[in-house]
Length: 311
Image (tube, rainbow, N blue to C red; front, side):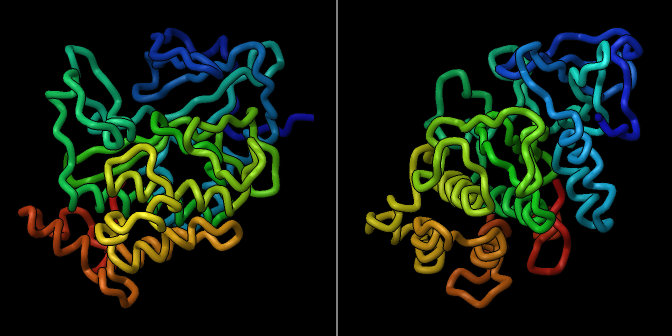
């Protein structure tokens, strides 16, 4: 029996919608009313566990105010299930804020993580890419999001370069979309999981999602973002003298730990290395280098002064 969730809606009551995207699991529409809301309708062959989707929707309401606010600011967390003829057919979620999009080759594009992990291409000439210092700040933002999710036993599962967004407008910020793929540890996901090629944990069975696999993928995200390399792995860092020299001893040690199943570092450890919250030779690295680019630290909510990062 499907449990009711506050805000459940019927598809027939949603009115006019504009097609935005057609993906592997469903089709996304932009509603005319209310403004800023997207409708995701699953394809007919996608099995949806309505109760698990409901639990995911309700989860933020049970969190403390700071964590609830961070999730609201940094994710397109689903806020309602959509039913059609008695079946859970989709969900409603907020649209990514405008600053997480740009215009490339004459059309609007979301600022996906993939833009930061590959060499610049001709069609990206209009795109302003982050400096090394800004990359570190973006890494801090992603780490902060994962830190809060993991604190509440929420696993991301599939770390997709298309579902993680970024911006430099108003200071480095990040945003996660397609959050219906998240799950509570130990529970089934609302929809069948996927694993983006090149982002799987080599020590885990295909499709397995655990806190340890999430931490491995978080290591991939951090290392790849810092280097601008879509393929680098913790094992590469450990075996490469040039990469070890580039990262320094603290980040290199974390990369080595990330290569050991069952011992992967949590987001806290990476944050400590990048922000100087814990004593290390990299102390203050992000704050110093970002300030050197001509930005005031409080513009991006410097973690070293106790301010919360902004999405």
